[in-house]
Length: 98
Image 1: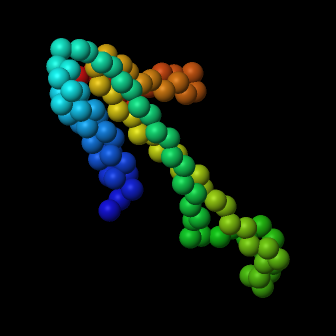
Image 2 (image 1 turned 90 degrees about the horizontal axis):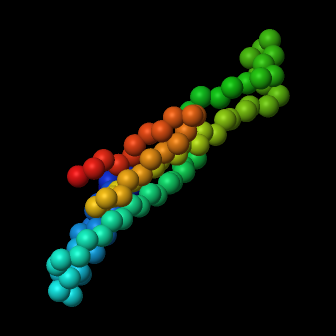
């Protein structure tokens, strides 16, 4: 399956398991808050090549391949906890109240 689906399912399961364990221990009247943020980075290589040293006969001295970094942020919360990302002078809510 898709790695992102797997991560989302695992985050959901972690919150569910914490709830199940607390009920098993008889903890039913306490409150809790939790916020979790996982940041992943992947490196991809585009299929096109740039040739900065192109010659008249369409050959090159060096083929340059640029790598692209893709960042993914997974955020989850329960209770009265929130995750906000600050970037470029702005604030972006990554979780929502429920």
